[in-house]
Length: 204
Ligand SMILES: CC(C)(COP(=O)(O)OP(=O)(O)OC[C@H]1O[C@@H](n2cnc3c(N)ncnc32)[C@H](O)[C@@H]1OP(=O)(O)O)[C@@H](O)C(=O)NCCC(=O)NCCS
Image 1 (cartoon, helix red, strand yellow):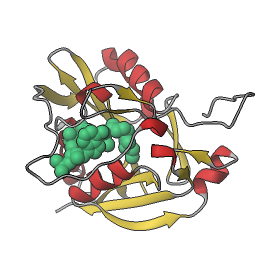
Image 2 (image 1 turned 180 degrees about the vertical axis):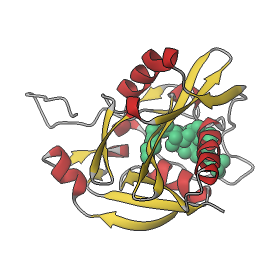
Image 3 (image 1 turned 90 degrees about the horizontal axis):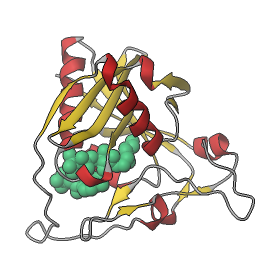
């Protein structure tokens, strides 16, 4: 998953974020956080989009967004390897193209988010939140008690995003990412990627 670099330390190139001020796509290590009051929150751009189940013809776009977010379609999470192409996928389609993906699978009686990713240019526009709410709807239809997600200790925007949407931390797999990468690699804002964090939200 991590490209070899003979000239220096290995860096994780995924996922990517977007500068909320200038709109530039940011490699993970170049992204930073800032805190504002609600009034001065950097405005999100208005994007019209629809969420729908993926169909066979979405395969190429799903492979492309997985490549951007993770580098491949196989995702190691919750102690298992999931193939996104074999999961239940919901896609977000904006007026001008494919915007995001949430990939779902049942794991130990709960609905697991295998991957959630929104292309940088659409981030901050409500696409991620809409994908999560659509996934909660699927969990409810299937009478599953929880929807759960894994992220890593460095991914502060994702931790913010999920907790803002009712997810609660319930487990930390210490050192899982060091084992996975074979070394400590820099993640969001250069924070060392060490642990896999599990959050879940009850489905009422
Ligand atoms: C995390 C992610 C899925 C959120 O999706 P999104 O479409 O940007 O989120 P939304 O627009 O629905 O929600 C924005 C909210 O999340 C916060 N947020 C999290 N990541 C953000 C981002 N990259 N850009 C803007 N806002 C972001 C906002 O502050 C906003 O908070 P609010 O609840 O106070 O309004 C998306 O930023 C992304 O794909 N990031 C890179 C991949 C990643 O980290 N995936 C999660 C791995 S578990």
